[in-house]
Image 1 (cartoon, rainbow, N blue to C red):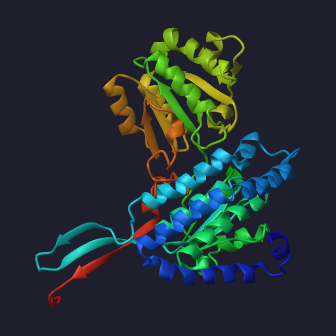
Image 2: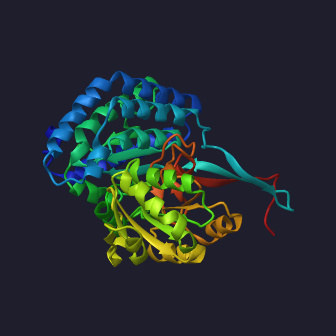
Image 3: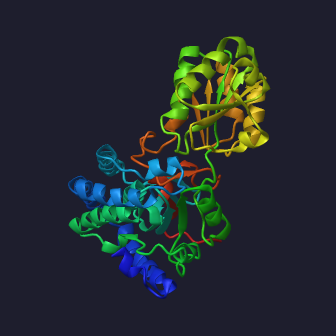
Length: 427
């Protein structure tokens, strides 16, 4: 079906029609019952599990198309589906269903001296546009999260994941139908033409309320530069771990290896390790050996190169590179002050971690480092909405307006004020 529709001569006509249908679906979704939304989500999870073989078959075709291309291994990993990943996808949808419905929640209430009673109440954003590449699971995560928050969503996948995403999308539509919700609440753009992205960035004639990009640096940069609607996004996941002199060495080795090597291609993978100079004699070499032993290339500052022969000298570019690969940069810094200075200079404000037993070091790190997610004695790979108990996430936002960090159901709502009076008039 994708290939057939891809011949459409007028992308704008197609996309604006998608926008109109999404806007029409958003209204009933905004006041749909929690029971109906949860029934749809449960049916979606069931359909995904039942469609396991078909989804894997379509994913195999996507993988065959990218075989032999110059696609980064990290992107191939994101594109790849397995039975476990499909099961996790379904479980993520069930976890979203189990979350408290944010729509209609009274988040604040107060009474004025004149007797007016005021409430701030969560309300859906409306229509969310999600543009992603190489991540077919985003189809399920974004569709489910937007539905739970009462929003319609327009999904535009990359050409590399189009078959996988279409197979997953069909399961979501089954869930909507089973619950009697609008079919067009979750739409997948049926063309791979880049003009479709441009149409979404222009807002689909006023239909889209916010855009969420999930993909490489070039995609996110384009969205941030061209979008005429608000954007929830991060440009890079340039994550750091600082290992203090007070750190437990065994713990530090386990954390840095996991943070780098569990999955090198995700935005929460650590890219730079900073080691306290006061721990250079005790911690540095064991940390380097642990990382290298896990199959990771190390690019280090002068002190690091001196500590371990064979380490490649780091260039200035290394400190600002998101490798998304089995490569890490390592530097020796002058304590927590040096770590904070390095992070402030090079960080993308996504995720940073401190490994320390000294509470004053941890307090300074948490107070002075201004990134969306900060961790103490834990891997940066926990930078994930599912791990935060959000069921899943639609992305990690590093901006400072509205949503920051994992974007879950609460972040996909806005609010309105309800004011109750007893006949008051303003003098």
